Every structure is written in structure tokens, then in C-alpha cells.
Image (cartoon, rainbow, N blue to C red; front, side, top):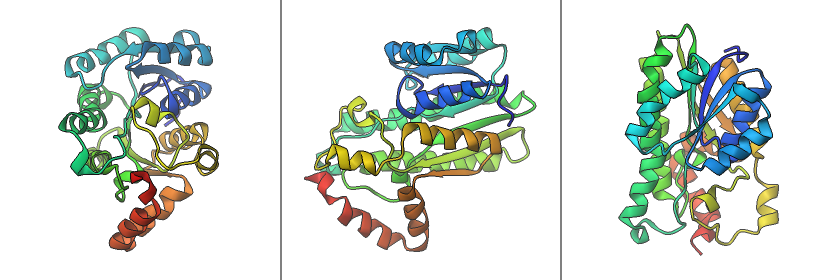
Amino acid sequence: MELRDRVLVVTGGGNGIGREVVLALLSRGARVAAVDLRPDGLAETERLARAGERLSRHTADITDRARVAALPGEVEAHHGQVDGLLNVAGVIQHFVPFADLSFEEMERVLAVNLWGVLNTTKAFLPHLLARPEACVVNVSSMGGLAPVPGQTIYGASKAAVKLFTEGLYAELLDSPVAVTAVFPGGVGTDIAANSGADLPGQDAGDLAARLTSPEDAARQIVAGVEKGSYRVVIGRDARVLDRLSRLAPRRATELVAKRMAALLG
């Protein structure tokens, strides 16, 4: 997809990878509707972008189906059309075993990571199908390829996003809508803090050195939009796990469990 003058909706546009995706799209001449729960985050994205009317801000909780249903009209009122949806928003859970996780937290993780994607896709898809060329990009996770200790429900939500996206791809093969699934490995964002979950047993300096930067992750996601990629796998950690989880799924599960055992203290 040629991005200049296209209109793309980005959820999670107020921080982390989502913000960097917004900035990367704008730098390529696109118009962007940034969606986020936090208006202050969106205001900072706007300040950094300095893109004028090419950027619109939309404060919304993607788990609120009625609010999401109103977004296409808002975007079209500002930009005149909508050519793509990038579902980047997401949260993780507290680093605890499933047995210690509350139903309230499970529901929150599934509501944001899975139902948020379903809500926005359902709302925007009719508008995208009416365009000569469009895209849906859903961010899954390395955690959706193999389980991570203390992130079982998060992983389940991201695995669901993976299969939903692949199913949508199959359904839209003969349509103008390209569908892409994104699998980031470790990325240096504030997702843990924004989700209210700490990273136990991790040295901040050592961790940062092993993570993909949000800017680099965004660059790869935007390149995937331009190419109409089926999958975008970000980071050496995700690429290794992607291969291993398909070739030797039990070994992948046990390897991750041993290497990441410190996450459970």
C-alpha cells in the first residue's frame, strides 16, 4: 500500500509502539487517526508529530463497543475516508500463575487484547471493504506463539488474536483488504507500568539492551503495511521462538519456562 494521503487508524496511539507507528505513518505522508484511552498520551503524540490536521485524536476505550462503533464516523468526518486499521493497543497481566489470577484481571486482559481487536475490526471493516485498497493489521505477540510463565492469560489472548487475524486473512483473500498479523518479541515500552504489572527479577539496564526499540518495531510494522505482508515477526527472540514453536512445540514450551522462571520469583 502506498501510504501518502491514505488514512490509517491506530489504536494505542498515545504511547509505546502505537505512538511510534503513528509518527512513522505520518513521516511517510499518511493521515492518521490516533485512538487511545488516555487523552494526555494522545496530546503528547500530537505534540511530537507536529502534523497539523493530518493527525486526529480520538479518546476511546476499545472495550466499549458503543464508543468504538462511533469511531468510523468521527474519522471520516475529519479525514474524509478510512483506508486502514492498525490494532496496537494491549495490556499484560500481573506476573502470577493462573491459579493466583483473579477473574477480574482475566476479564480485563481478554477485553482489551481480544475484544478490543474484535470491536474495532467489526466497526471499521465495512468501511475498509468499500475502499479500492485497504488493510487490517493486528498486533499479536511472541507470547501468542509459546507460553511465558506468569502470562498465561495474556498469551491466550494474543494467540486468539493470531488465529482471528489468520481467519480474517482467509475470508478476505478476494477482497481489497490486506490482513497482517504482527508478532513482536521484547520491545522497550511502558506496557508493564501501563498495565499495572511489574517485571520481577529483571535488571532494567540488562533488559533494555536485549529489547527491540519501539521506533524499530514501528518501522517494521509500517514496512509490513507497505508490502501487504502476511506476517511481521519483530526481534531475534520472536523469530527464534516462531521457528522453534513450529518445529518442536514441547521443547519451545519447556525452554521458555526454564529461561523465564524468574518472572514468577
